[in-house]
Image 1 (tube, rainbow, N blue to C red):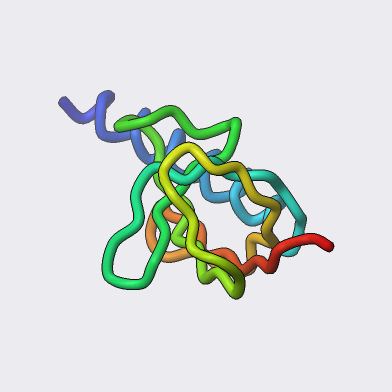
Image 2 (image 1 turned 180 degrees about the vertical axis):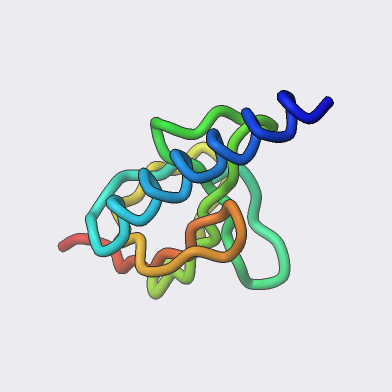
Length: 89
């Protein structure tokens, strides 16, 4: 049990480091869900129901699940990214 906890801590450190490196970068996300004026999305490096999500603040026309949009990852909340985006012209 102790080795398992130690391995989980190491993996969490690796994950946090990788997430920090992605902050400030632009990426594409796919919308999984629209709820309460917020969009819940994922990037190409996030597996559904396994990895965290991207909480997208969107300044554009309404999105529906399956839409793919560009955004900027600007912060972390636990294992989830918070991002913002606007439609490209």
